[in-house]
Length: 170
Image 1 (cartoon, one colour):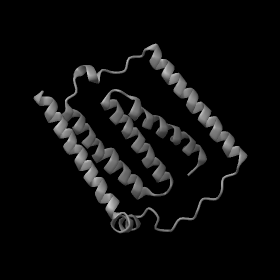
Image 2: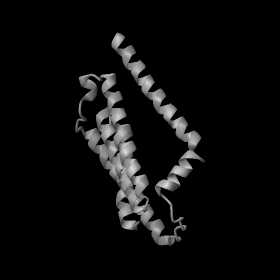
Image 3: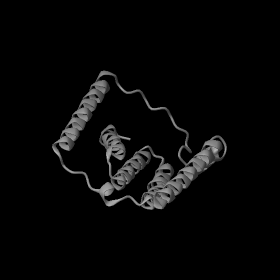
Image 4: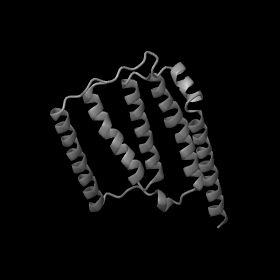
């Protein structure tokens, strides 16, 4: 992976991840999450792990985002909660300060890269990122965390449905 492409993708990933948290509109946050996930998939492709990149797009940017949008629509937000962001002086000031922070981070990273040369990347095995390698790890070493995550997602969906029902009864 070239340093230049990483220096372009890294701020994009950080900005889109922050916008997931900072946007008030849940649909905009979900779309920012899609940008974050697709950017991470590009990083995986550049690291020569195409299977992980494809999984990132199909599972997270595809299936999980459909689930998030379903839950957002299930909650049935009111129109005033879905209003777009107004371009007030405060919003412009926040964006400018965010730009200054990222400029400072970019200068710090640039200075750190010039001060100390990068070490050689560790050698990866030949089957790193292959379907066989990921399958072995997923169904041996990481089976318990994999199953626990599925229960966490199931609990979140059930909680959203219960909250939506409770809100509809009020």
